[in-house]
Image (cartoon, rainbow, N blue to C red; front, side):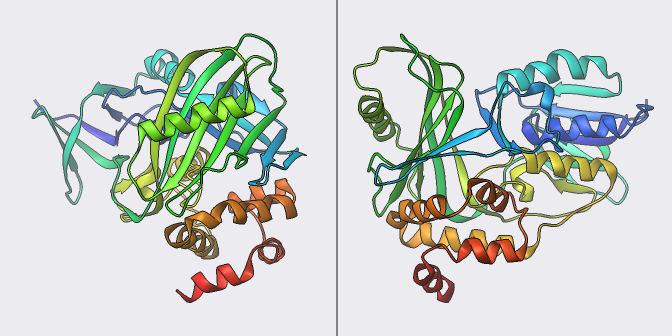
Length: 367
């Protein structure tokens, strides 16, 4: 009996793998292409957030909450609130995302083979590629999209430790997302600390401690910081913890961005903003390009900007709150978001960068 050969195999059923799966199906109305999805079974809780304008469409039917207003709190405690339309800041839960794909989308597509398998090794060939799995089975495909992580160039991590909570009384303004709150001074030479709030109603919110550091995840320290933040910003307020999420995002550049019949997707292919960790819309755009057989490269100057900020993190982490304060107090928030999304013009970038600490950036440029 001949071995079944798939047109494409996707290793990993996370954000990048499932977005590519979706776009491959959209680009093949006849459903002629045979697709293999190898899934490790990881369903850990995650929050995928991103900003888009009305012309974009990163799974709008899965967006559970959107905000048109944003809050930033400086390291001096000043609160800055801004309307960001036509942009909106969107939230998709991993639970809703996975439920859609595994309960609705995949079962409805006969050309998709979904297997709970862990890939161990890939053997590349001229025409056929072979995936060897941990249990000894193997599969063949003409192309392979591999989302497994690869080493990242750099030594900075973004650790986050958050809790979904419900207060006993309506005290939350759910029309504003708090992108960064540096008002609780826990930043040191080793780490920059801020808090992030996604309010879902007047009583429910995700409140997250976020830390940029070269050190490994420190659960006890982060838990202590989170408790102090709640005590400081919501004093004597009773609440219940609904659920928790935690994780680590490497801040840097992928060390492997190969192209060919075996190629990387997701963070491993550079589809994560090196200086912020935002990735969802980048993964989606990459999925669209790959499904359509096209490619679009981000201008190299944005890579340069990311390198500059990462250099400051590596050498002078304690200055990050001040860098962010200057940025968010001097530049319109919509311009900042477009800049962080690599969607500004060179003229706009010159104007924006002129508001920052020029001597600090020049010092790290020389380095």
